[in-house]
Image 1 (cartoon, rainbow, N blue to C red):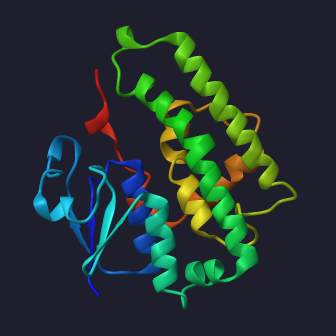
Image 2 (image 1 turned 90 degrees about the horizontal axis):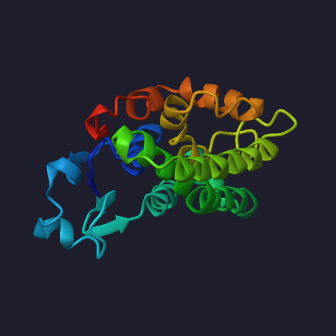
Image 3 (image 1 turned 135 degrees about the vertical axis):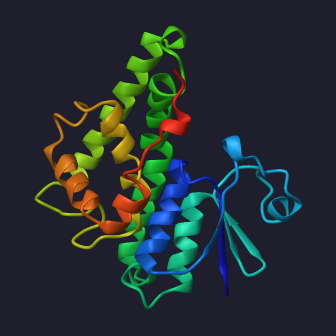
Length: 216
């Protein structure tokens, strides 16, 4: 079936799906919607999801929404691919799922908070105490990732690149761009980031400008 991705490429959650589609080597159409592009009131989009936000993956007549749900969907329909095969193995899937959930609950929320303070707000709108709180939460989450990457483990769920690396690694380009020193105490995280940054799909879809989101 044909795939259509709905969402603006400047969204970090859309970038997760773009990265995954590239790693799976899948062709797709891309409808750029949300933010300044509008389109969330398009009846065709609204028929796919009850939630008016992106990304949404249209797979035939099915609408799959929420970025990590989309990653899992791609794995289920492509079990022959290494990313799909890992999710078919209960032990590997358990580790990958746990990291994806941790990213959603503990890393991404304070990262988004930092990003809003430093990119989406003018300097006179920012609140130092709020920013410090988000930064502390991000550092605590990175410390957990550091423990997960201990003993030289190259990727979050083990020796092989997985959906967990896409789900959490998609945040790293912007995080280290807005706070270059935030990984000073987490050498393992920095090495992991460098491994991900060497991937062509990361360079194409994640390590890209976000100037359209910047408020000055």
